[in-house]
Image 1: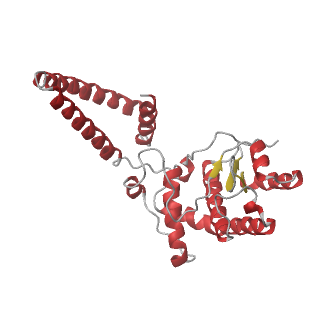
Image 2: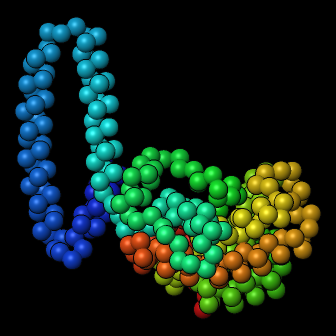
Image 3: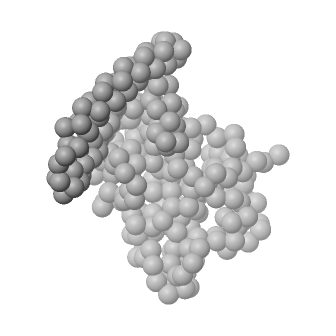
Length: 277
């Protein structure tokens, strides 16, 4: 119920762009009253008709109607095409961008529009990134203390990173996993970062994932195995930054041309934001 109410509020806000939210809510309330009344009437008639049926038939009908209800809701949600990016939609667009990067060179990519993405984006939990994106876990929106601990960088290096973050509004680096061996990618955002800058930070994190993979690093392994060459890590981070600076304008142009509003981007994070005085 809480999740449904939150999702309903977001959908109403989406539909109210260029209109009046109070008018949308009034119409939604009226429709809910009518559909609720029709549902109660249909339920009463159905309950009366199956009141003398065997329990096996009753439970079979219940299972079939429940499955049909879930299917109808899923089909209905496919009709809602949000023009803002969340983590899953961003993964789909960046995956398509990486596929086109080799063939279209410096040309603006032809990315999927919101209507197309609404037909393939996940509606349930346990979303997995597309296969052509790296499998390194991205710890997004972590605290700076955890960033310093997992990255293992010296205080002087962290100080320089904060100086760069004042311009970019985010910090991206490789780090250890929270448990076990292997690598992860760390993303810290500044509290003053705009939604578009947060999206760029996530794009940079995925670029670093690919750069690490090209250097031969693996997401999992024995503790310390993947820190065999600090120079390789530095090269991967430098290549990722260069790739991000070159590719982000193209990705942004392609996304805007496809009808996406990057100023409304909402990515999944752990809730922390860095404040720099």
